[in-house]
Image (cartoon, rainbow, N blue to C red):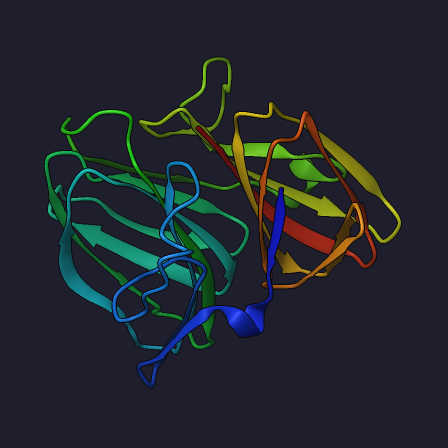
Length: 232
């Protein structure tokens, strides 16, 4: 199964200094066909103006991964964590039993992020937050694991789910293969560029839900930056 979700078909919200596109039902956007994909519950494509962001609010029982495409996001939470995550880098918050936090763009330029929520395998647990850089050179021509709850994924930010968040950078004409299983749910979104999956072309900021494959094989039609979620 390959379900292309063009950027123009995504849910939209315009809050002035914060503009969002929703790959899945979120806030006022409701589409019963787009509630989740496996344990992937939310994928938001946010554009945040300088000096704007998300004021303090709470979460519980959710793994929240932020992939920064441009600019930077500054995080503060009720655990005492403060951190700035820049373009190409990733932060993860395990909400566990409950945490409050804020996310602001304190830069002089727009910040663009993918915000990804994955349902944890079990409710509860102590909340936590972490961030780290992931240089593009470490994922050139291949998928590198950015966040994971899978055994053996050393160096990835930990999440509490049998899932992975991966990134790849490809040059035009380059091919990448990711091994999968028919019972896994994959969701792909190019941050930049354009790729082909079988006979399907996927443009920047489109989404594509994929299942039933033994392997995912992509060809870059342009220089591309890809984000992939693999979940049960």
